[in-house]
Length: 317
Image (tube, rainbow, N blue to C red; front, side):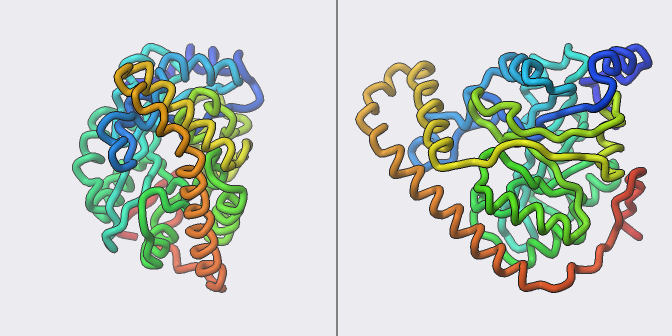
């Protein structure tokens, strides 16, 4: 796993081992101010998805016991500029990709370098071309919040692609409902997928409350080798309506600090609980629909390539 953001030398191995000689933990889904603007109509012009400062996120994650740290901003690696000096940081991103059906979904891609980022962004509107690159580069990747409607509608064909070609599913997302996470975990188990956990936090309060743990790992490479070998464990909380509402209020407060003129919009803040309630109900409906549809399937699709501890996947096999 080549990346400019961490050092896997013997000295770093000794450093990591001395910090934690029994397991490694990582929150595999974290956002910062570099995740871009929110996708809510009107607010997309003035409000960011997250106001998390990368340095503050790093400190928070270390305080909560994370052995290694990554950032998964939307289609961006700009947070690396502030964090690349840390030997326990590695580069990742959350990629918005276009499926053959025309729908969109989010993939977490881990342990990349700057060249990977450029090529991933070039290919992200073509899921098949993106898969070919990720497979050729042997990059570890997952589908995030599989039972969420955050990226729009879904087609049954999308799930067949995920079943055949995506090695890992995010099965414990700190923003998703308990049923959505349970459905993702059952689907991953039925399809033989690797399960991951991440906070998906857009505010500092939720960072590090969900994490993936691998025992017996001392470096980033060993962490992902352990995941591929089935030694990963997931931990953390589920999302809730109250948590979502509190996060939105937090983001709006950060908006007011960044753009003082938006304080004139304070009366509209009274609508936030209604907005988040509508969103939460939509998420529950989306989850219920697709869990029911997929659980009718008795057998999973034939896997066109296998994921093992060496991750020697081959597109042509």
